[in-house]
Image (cartoon, rainbow over all chains, first blue to last red; front, side, top):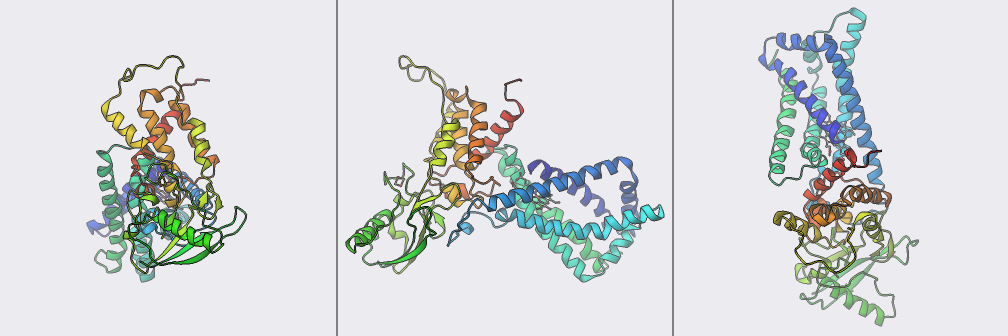
Length: 206
Length: 251
Ligand code: HEM
Ligand code: FES
């Protein structure tokens, strides 16, 4: 869980950096160039395969743990006071992960799948920046993306520091630092992603 | 003060159980929570009814027996206390208090508020021990222990095995208990001989007993009457990883 989680965090860093190229507001030139490199480089295809394996492992293991843990208290409490002792998002990793999963299916269907299809059929990639503009012209889609990113933010708010604990980090000095970095990461990365559909929808970037 | 108690009543392990409501007048605010139950049971016995079964022993916060889940919290609303250390002055006149047993698959209810916590004993038997030589008693302080490590081991040893960590955890995980025992012995020179087999065996027994997996939520540390920090869980994780990767038993 921790290993694949950190691996997915590394992917998020790469993904957000590449997509942030659209903020240059150069009609997507830089972004399309980098995306083209990522889409055609053979090494990147291997990394992509690893990403899918890591993602599926994380999701499957997450669901297995979620389901087995939920069977460990067959008779529920009549009064459940967990609010007083923990964060709701720490207790909702399975649910948040599932929301992210639903979002990912939509997201891949929006960009990854049509791009691959186009490549196989026509031998060249889509103009992904144009594709972004088209996808984010629908307010409903923008809202779905924002919902997915809020889920991701809370998932990381717990998950980032949790992964380090899973690996045994117990130093009183470093835990607050890792927690701080985790909270910053859980806010900055989803906010950067969220700005993309918002700015494209309002045509601030075009 | 007047208190309305909603108490879980369950005849035995097979009985599905139900809540029973009791009205108590003249509750003294200096009573401990358990003393209030003594008064209730006195009343029930006089009325010819079955008294509420609940676990208790030392009544001074050191044995860990007094398992009561009070208004949604193990040992009630106070931080760092057991039920026997909780006093009625922390409630208001007219309050309704809901009292349930610890609930977890690994802690079956025996009767009313009494649960079977022998799963903890079996985890201890799996590895919570050290080897000592027989013979004459060794001189005290012959084995040097670093001060910092002695303090940390002492903090872990404060665990009284009450099971509040399991009761509070959404996953019904026993990791705070198990990690405190693992860490306590791993930090001391006396614990070194079985250091690696201990962590593997205790974790394996924990899983066999039907406790859930830890996901670092933190409810346990917040509810622990001895305020054992969750950093011990990370410490046990690192012990586990090291033991898994290098068991020192080359095949
Ligand atoms: C980009 C997507 C995702 C990232 C970056 C991510 C990251 C993480 C991280 C860092 C952890 C903490 C690991 C630990 O506690 O050791 C975690 C835990 C978890 N993740 Fe994800 N995750 C993602 C997607 C998902 C999805 C799609 C699911 C679907 C079910 C999911 C389910 C879970 C669950 C249940 C946990 C808690 C398990 C535990 O702490 O033992 N995650 N995630
Ligand atoms: S009765 Fe011993 S700790 Fe409460």
